[in-house]
Image 1 (cartoon, one colour):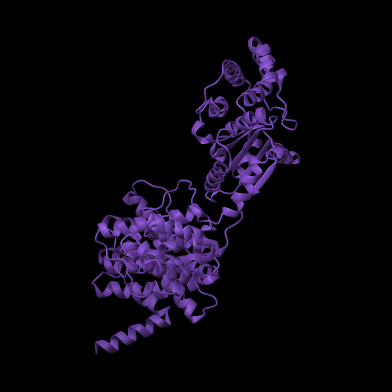
Image 2 (cartoon, helix red, strand yellow):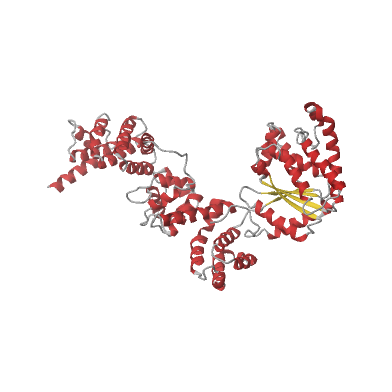
Length: 595
């Protein structure tokens, strides 16, 4: 399993970015500075910042240059976020130092000032200039107004004097998880940063999703006028002088990242450091990166924990072929890729613990399908036939794909065929309609099903309603699969499904839904013959239409009911059989066979 925490190990090729950004962070000629490390959730912002902090610490004098990691999310829901950040910065300079009396006095003034500043709820109200709204503060805090004004004026001077006393050349403050905070906290942190931005020795590095930060700014200042949408961008640009957006991972980067994650499970610490150093040469292999990893394993047998190369080679062979599809489904997001591999690993353990016979390749393939095509995966689950062990939808899609059917009668099949790469993925080995019973895999998927909705216990009535809704849908594949599943349900559910379906026979729709409902009732009655009489009573109220699908299906139900001894009303059989030439031919064929 792989941890979701940030790491300072470069599996994503951040090294070149880190070196450049680290140089910027310690360059005093451009300070004060706020650097924004931008990217979406899970893109590696925290890991890049950890590597950046480590690189800065390795290149500067720790007595003259300090770094500080501040997790803003830790103070979510608390009032002291501003004070906590200020105190964290001030306390960083006290580490391993004996302060002079003068320095202690200045430090006390700064900390006292922090306690006053926490009342300044109106700091930053004038967002375009980023100047405190002191008038608002005077109105709200009359007793503290003079003290607050003096504090705001003296804080910058005291802080610069404090750093000079300690002979400190600079500090880099890393603020992580800001985009997880509620809007007001985001702005509070920005307001606090503003206190230090006139001090040339301060650099802030903020990791965040810029879209979420802009939303937080707009939410706090209630920017609802579309003409003022530039307000949030202007505000952010005044705080973040230098934005750096993490580039999107390319296919070769993702393949190398997945290979590195797999390898870490099997190599010694020493071999892992060697592998990290050789990442550039591995990724240079491009599409042959799988072969490059295989060669590396064979060339470093002593680097394997158990001294065997079979396990990592097998895992690489199973995982790397799906990288391109993972890249599509997970959008190259490193955290999502880790999450995917952890889910697969958990399911493998669950299968072993529950003594389930599963094929590892099928397990991975279904997990990829679940992530890359979640809507189709949900439909696969819905159309799963417990008796045969296959998904009716998968069977129909593959059949249409092989036969190059242009206009399948099922909307679900049609959409699946139009989804880029899906049909080819289903047909590739291991093919999901060739002898694999999907039951164990779907059982394991229930533990973390991406497309699963809701929760709690499903009542028998809810289950019956679900079956009835699906059977009466316009999609034939969906309706047929639901009918087979309903037929295997317990008697109380079956009875409820029949009760719910019979009224749907009289909903005018051109015959498609009527046909699906009758076909579903036929499937159910074959397993539960006692419901024939109820279904026949409904059919008797239907008009017989020559050559219609409804008449044909009704005729087959009537004939099946007759075979098991169900009582037919006078003329019912003749009325529907005569309306369907196909049914007539089947009756004649049956008569000949009986002779």
